[in-house]
Length: 368
Image 1: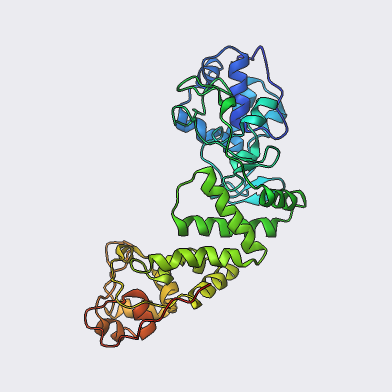
Image 2 (image 1 turned 30 degrees about the horizontal axis):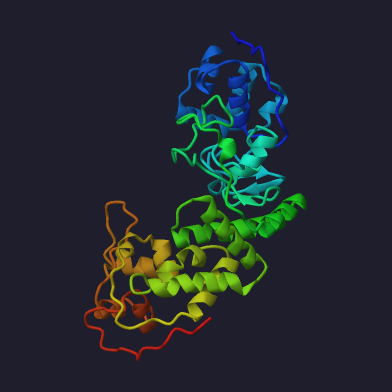
């Protein structure tokens, strides 16, 4: 039997699913969202709550059990399909699932919370890590205890770990010009443009391997918008990171996130490669080579899948037969040449192969 709430918060149009539950717990005197749900016959833990708020069907069931309005049920963003990892619809644009935070009530703008105490849907999208209204980066954890406020807390603007007010935690100043560009694209429902920006952002995230702090997330967005505008800043940013890492990782391997993407990302990656020369005596300490998939090996070596399959079938390349997708790659120039790899490909992958007889003179990296 449904235990109707005495106080039922009215949802804001751009509120998140977790936010309405936190406000309902507070207004009805519960110590947590879990206690709120238990009072209506729903026993749920934190992992299940995280899953429910990003699943429209499950969230609707929770809302109806609590007796909240249909407007509240619509706060869980719709998905493109029934898959848990399918794109989610935000402002009439489908945004890849990987671009969303896994914590529905994590990143925030303290100034916005002060004005209206609820979590905004825009704060869910990781690249959108700045507030245009207050010209600052979002904050993604309590600055006092360094912990992330729980999704099941009962105070929208208080850290449940140390009881510090979140309203005092202002983010660093930010140049919000690129966020204004994104908001214009969203307003015009230009899905192709938004997806172009976010695809580059996702590739850049895999490429730079930095953490997911709002500062890094927004810096990636600035570069992604530069790519969308065909500005040289995107090219210079990526190329400047490739060169110092060449002693450890070959350029084509570094740029796999771009080379394996759409045609526009692939062209971008090839343009970067055209300006980065293989260097001599740089070592072969790339441990990740042993963890490449077949498709990645084909991309790096520009080899048709059929050719790789023939080499594996003939035993020329030792591919694990335990069902693993990992590649055991040849380690000498003789083996590589036997497999049909060119000298350029050999230098990109193994600049220091033991019996490599050909060594070009060192060429300085072209300044960008």
